[in-house]
Image 1 (tube, one colour):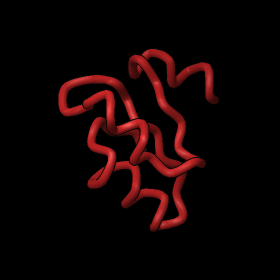
Image 2 (tube, rainbow, N blue to C red; image 1 turned 180 degrees about the horizontal axis):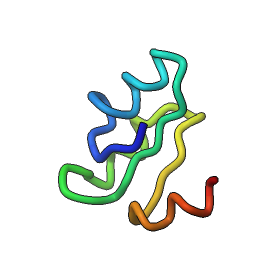
Image 3 (tube, helix red, strand yellow; image 1 turned 120 degrees about the vertical axis):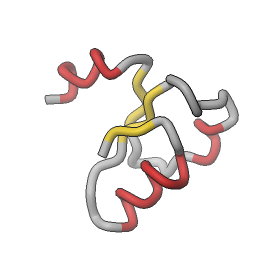
Image 4 (tube, rainbow, N blue to C red; image 1 turned 45 degrees about the vertical axis):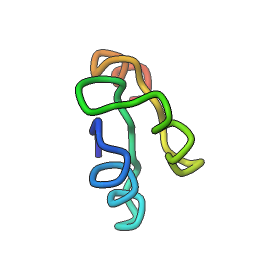
Length: 53
């Protein structure tokens, strides 16, 4: 799951046993990185997703 909301997107994905990726766009706030689970990837842009595949 790729999203810009650390709770609704990333944490929810990880709780559903999916991989979560936080993207630094729109809803993202710098403090969100502190809330993101350790296994979450953090991307500057959706275009960076290609490097994880």
